[in-house]
Image (tube, rainbow, N blue to C red; front, side, top):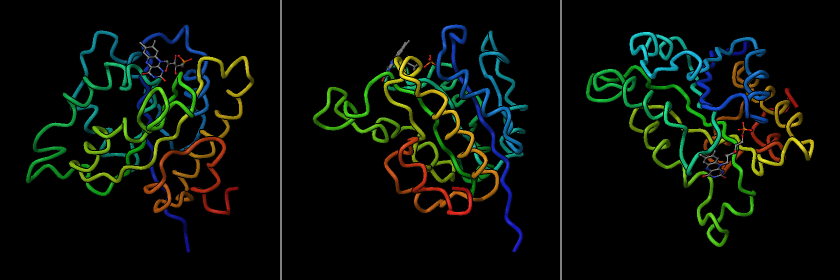
Length: 209
Ligand SMILES: Cc1cc2nc3c(=O)[nH]c(=O)nc-3n(C[C@H](O)[C@H](O)[C@H](O)COP(=O)(O)O)c2cc1C
């Protein structure tokens, strides 16, 4: 049986790209994956004048939407909020006739300065990473998209000096390729708490491992 291939849209947001040690290599990896459309939101909209029609058209043309960003104050860099506020319009993304995104998948690819063990009830960040993404999960629910567990790198500030960036970029490439090729186990990806370079094998089908 022919594999069902998916079109993946990566919406990347980093306001300070010359200082980025992790997201830039990740974005570079994303751009090289066939079937992935990689959009640099700050690059395209430095003045925040987001072209709503163009962004809605992009959404219609893709099956999987990925927000790639560094975690900033437990949230997204501001342009991703602006993008949501403007692009996910009533009648397009929600409301009785707003069904444009129904059946798509949504995922966050995030980097966090905090250590993995800090993201739990008794850690200093008190919440699990997926809990902190609750508004985005509910955004996906309301717009009819399936929310996949976040792909995350923790301890991102020291990842370069610890030699962890290359491995994570390779995991990201593998994950995006698997999304394109329908080689992700979506049931597992929906139920997982998070996807990291350590457990990525759990959500990929055996054929791509
Ligand atoms: C304004 C700002 C807010 C941040 N907030 C968080 C945060 O809430 N949680 C966290 O773990 N790291 C936080 N960080 C650390 C960033 O997530 C980290 O610097 C980034 O993931 C590194 O990726 P980069 O090398 O691509 O910039 C913050 C950094 C900045 C500059």
